[in-house]
Image (cartoon, rainbow, N blue to C red; front, side):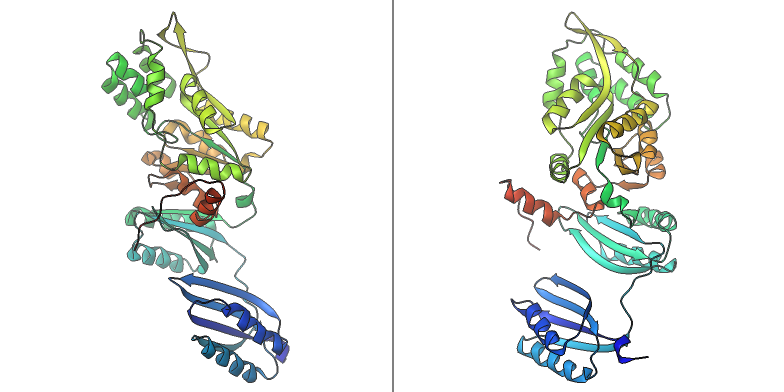
Length: 404
């Protein structure tokens, strides 16, 4: 093997300060080497810089020069001679996003252990967020995403964390339409139960809603029976219900952030257009589809106008909106929590069960169970620091993180 095929791995560690990287590369420049790979991380102002370069003939002289520069910077340097590039295995490449509230070392140990058990390798680790949740992105190679997803889903359930596995391909960067359920996803609670409170049937409606979302009842039949209980409610109550709605934490942040990147949004609901249309206007949602309550003489009749937006209807709406947005279904993210969202989740390129019923979590591509809707952006490779920087440029104040 010739000297040209040999490489040097230079690892520099120590307290970060201005000029560290430039000083190292100035030294490398004098040796005339080629840069093959670079990695740098910063943890609590401790710098770890790794540089892989071609090895010059007098590599020991370069090693001495690097060690001298490191000493001047108050840092330590290691120079290891070897052969070859730093290529990761191309087969079975995945992004594994680990989310915890909190994320304990024992949980990370369990995840890393399962990855090792299936013969895969963690090539890179990046932090996506440290508050109010901790989100870590692992670049994994050496095993199919489907097999990895199955193994890690079981471990995530045992550890009480979320683990999302996505193939590391261009599709992750091509996702451009978000289609969301509304009740218990975009907003907290169920609108129909809030309306039913005005008719005195809240508890009864809540029981039927829960059974329908668990897939125990036919959705259309259950919806019509629940809406029938609303007969006679003053239509003005819908204004009170809308005013009482609370968005899921992080909903505005998610929409605002992804809108900046050119994403389009749709909401598809088994609820009611009298509410969802106003939500769409408020949040700058591009498309909306829901059921329409019949109102006669200022009161609800207990009937629905037109076809019910049921499980199949939600999937049809997703396909329609994808066509209007000019994107393939594979470029759509769907987010939902109930059994009537399953067809929609399956139709999308990425289906996310958000604080969902067990039936839905098991069927979806991935699940997010923390109470922050903007955790979705971490699955797309967007860090909280990037979000906050963009908000700051727009004059949006972000609460300061807690001191650790």
